[in-house]
Length: 427
Ligand code: GLY
Ligand code: MN
Ligand code: MN
Image 1 (cartoon, helix red, strand yellow):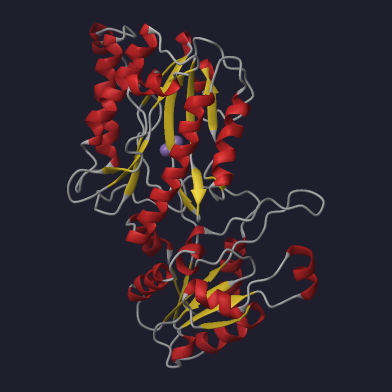
Image 2 (image 1 turned 90 degrees about the horizontal axis):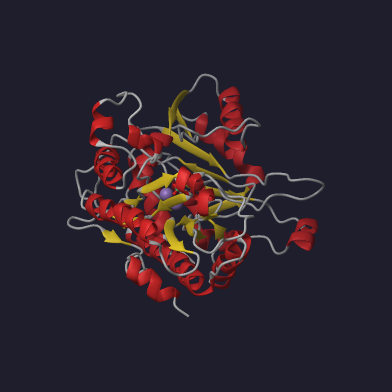
């Protein structure tokens, strides 16, 4: 169990940033229907989890730091006991367990949420209502989320109140990981490392990508990971040049490379690893050249993960260094670069993605891309090269913790050098 001091601290940090006479309210996620009476596996909304540690549907959190009745300054609402539900789906969380997990002292049934909110909102201590929206810039949800419906409903109930957004506050808080979060993320990375190490022993020509995925999932499950933090990419040969390849249906060929982009989710926290290995255990000369180019650049840009650095600097430096590497690899010449269309640099044909993102409760975690690095941030470092015409796709990715000094690689010791990978694959 995650120590509830994490959630107590997270709520206190949020409360400290609310203006006087504020209420912040949050709803849990709901299960997403699949077909018939089936649902997709439940995943808690990350901000709700960050503030409560509760992995249940039909729950609310209310924070009203100035409310005179101390017992209502923090209230967690959980689904009331339902015998039928308990019979079909298993024991439900009770008030004592919910309080223990979250550290919230006052826990009530979710059927009491709107009446408690009414009492506070219509007192002289609830002028500002803070609502949570998921503000990840690329997120789209055509069907609408429970959070969106909740925001709409609250605004209809209290049209005369002042409103504020919790997202900017929570995004900033979530970017800096506490010691407990760092420990859990390290545990997630350790499980992912174990899965990759197993693959180093088991991958061989003619296997199918999904068989490799099965090896990974076995280790994830055996180590109590909740599952994948994102759709795993197990891409042999040219499949690796498709950046979001996740069909994982092809057969692996002798002489090809195999790109893994995998990460388990453990206690709701993500890990994110990429490694590229030769299917038959030995890199060809050309594969070595390309792999070494990416690894050299990775070592160089890893130095930029220090306080004051930023993702833009990492992207720009990587593109500049990879351009030189690509010239050495014969993909184009110095002369070609001089005459290239500045809006379409030649190197972008072979490296088209960003090199870094925050990880945390979400694999692409809450961001403020203008915020420079501070100790406690955990970011990926993931340069690559994708040469479609040669069927070569390479990405190497580590998760780095920013410290006052050098970054800490959460995949430290995991094979990454050509000799280490070849040695680990020898049978
Ligand atoms: N696995 C997703 C990413 O590397 O960003
Ligand atoms: Mn990745
Ligand atoms: Mn990544």
